Length: 358
Ligand code: NAD
Ligand code: DAU
Image (cartoon, rainbow, N blue to C red; front, side, top):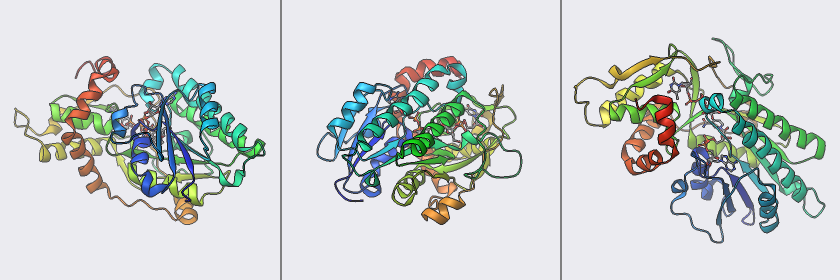
């Protein structure tokens, strides 16, 4: 990628966005990175510690729904690429309070698309040099039974307010491509794991509860299946799709790594037993597993068929699940300062409300 590119990264202080920015030197070498993040409960500037405003980096605290701010940013910076991560991302929160998901995920994406349209299609810029990468999810395809996979042609069938809001935003991106010719691609990825994930999601939540000797809440019978991908592999896939993807196309990204939730939780228990001091009771962390009321509308199984991305983009995941999980669990155990800071924020309140301090 030429050195004069300017990449707007929305949601840069969240889990995947911050991993992407940390890898930007290798993923988008020489590019200027402009980060826009509202710093919601899930956004933590500490995730970008070490980055300072300068020739190749700028951080702006702001809301993607703020059209004045977003248009100003497109005026101030020669943005030719958008990597759009910013979203409300937690399914359980979308069940408790869907309004913010509709606002951020739909209206926020609409606002960014409008700003890109005005800036890129005004005749002063060559749209061939621009691209809007919309980072979406496999959840838009709905829920699988025991067999089959999601492909790029699987009909959309979202079932939670979160996935419905992401599906809506995907439709808007497609509409802007077909109607206005906005250069855009969509990536639909499976569940990510790795460092810097907010500890409301299964893997960091269970890791930290296991460390603290608290209950490990498993929804329903623990037999729901997710396809887990190491976060850095997702970031590489996004940059490869940016370089080699065709505008107007969608690309599925997955780990080819299906696991039941109970398998994930047991694996974490074993890793925490191995890496942390034993529980005072001397029991294995598996003794903390507690089956709790299921998530309403809980999707049974997600599984990505990433053949198109493998054959047309040439991307494949590099991290194996065993080493990836060990690295991830160790990261949360080693970064107690980060965990404490996250827990001091509004996360703490939410944690008490959702899990009653368990
Ligand atoms: P996250 O919740 O960790 O981070 C979201 C970030 O967006 C935070 O930094 C937050 O402050 C910011 N943000 C939220 N609302 C904003 C607003 N109105 N304006 C500006 N910034 C705002 O999310 P994540 O897990 O890193 O997910 C990033 C993207 O990837 C999301 O679009 C999500 O749908 C998608 N995705 C996530 C996964 C996964 O497993 N985590 C898998 C596939 C796709
Ligand atoms: O598939 C991609 C999606 O993966 C992303 O689009 C979402 O942003 C991301 O949050 C994730 O959604 P999930 O709902 O699959 O992730 P979560 O970590 O919340 O849950 C993973 C599975 O574990 C799910 O089946 C619900 C279950 N679970 C979750 C929590 C938080 C539990 O059993 N107990 C829990 O405490």
